[in-house]
Length: 496
Image (cartoon, rainbow, N blue to C red; front, side):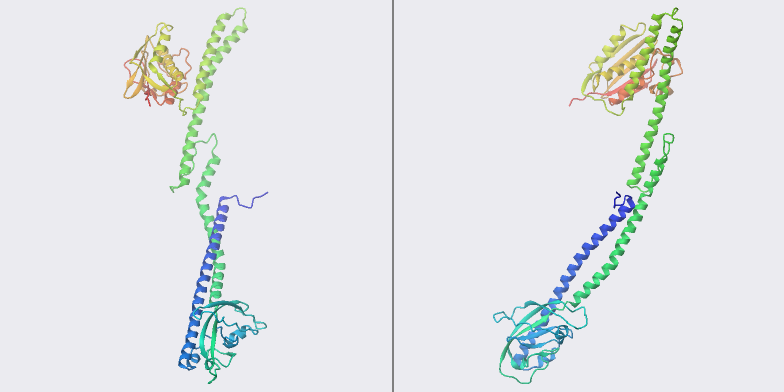
């Protein structure tokens, strides 16, 4: 089943921006409309209250002066909706529009006798136009505000049932000496509010979709432009294979997240290329190194099997055993180097390098014959590390030194500048300066006198440097008056 939400980043972002814009417009429309409606309603009521108080003041002035002039002069607006009701329930005077909008208009009830004349009452009234032509003001429920006026003479009231735009339209020139209590009603006209809100709704219904469309298009083009470098990176990555690891992705000029992504991708490709090259070299060197002892082993066995009656089987077995042992050493070294060289050693023990030196030299002093191995130890030398790996480190350095020494090998260990210094020096032909780094490559072979091999796998020095690196140290070849001097530096143990 296909998802309704688009999968493309540009489309989904444009849709999200559109929905967000639509939600903001809806919330803004609702809030602004509510605020405008309340403001207009407040203004309309305030205006109506002013009209009510003006009408009451006109009645009070006319009653005090005994003249109808204030009622005849104060003309109401042409669209005013008002009615004056006597305490008997009869309509005194009302706006002509009331009967126009509602032919069946019923007079509003007078205010209760006990009501406070200073307070404005609020009620509602509905206008029903009946057969009149349709009009936007019709069929509405109006808020009606009322105010009472006491002690109004009949000359300002009679006759009842009058219509006009002033309170004095149709008044008699004389009347009885009766006093009336009048209730003044004015309907709150919502026409300005309705017109303003209608205009507001119309404008928003027109500009709202335009804003949503503009937001969607802007988001689509913005994301498209922002993702253009990503697409370029993707295309280059799609073209990269094992034979084209030299390719690099384009880096945008902008210093943003995409530029940093491109830089990180290029760094990763750089590491992959180096790792791939190292792997190819390693496989080539390993196959070359393994080919020689396997060929010797096969040749010796084939010759022996071809002439079994003349073969020296103990010699054949001894030669095969030496080849197997060499294969075993190469395999062990390969397995050790195959582990992640960036992973730190588990330095959970305190190791005395001086003890390791004494033990290793003691073992070799009893078995190596013409090559003499001696040591110089400056007291206990403590490091935090793996004792088995440190023993392997010294063993590899000694194996290399003994194979190329003429008569002696010297091992020195001590402190210098807060680090442990382990030196293994032989009196052989030495290592040229140009070859001092190459000897630490896997299966490296030199062209000079040190190239003679007494069974080494070609991995000893590479493995030694790897062990030192795991312990946070360094291993290099340094200058010496005679022979080669291997110097390993390790961090000294710092008690917590």
